[in-house]
Image (cartoon, rainbow, N blue to C red; front, side):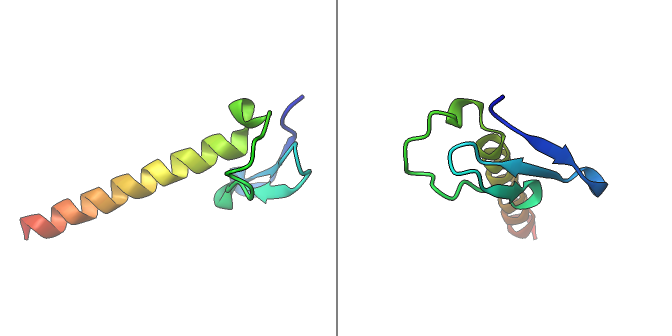
Amino acid sequence: MLLRYSVCLGDVLDLVCEKYKEKVDSGQARCSHPVEYCRFRSACMIHFIERDNKREQRLRELEKNDEQAEV
């Protein structure tokens, strides 16, 4: 299994990096070695959650900029 996790209170997942065996909180999901090759990346929940969080942040910033431009 490439990803091990346990569900905690509030639907927060404790994710484990399979390459380095490091625990990562899903709320702060971030790859600690993003430029290094990782054979697990194509199935890595940390990678996918980080990508989704970045996308959501960009959308919030765009919405904020649009609201400021309308004023």
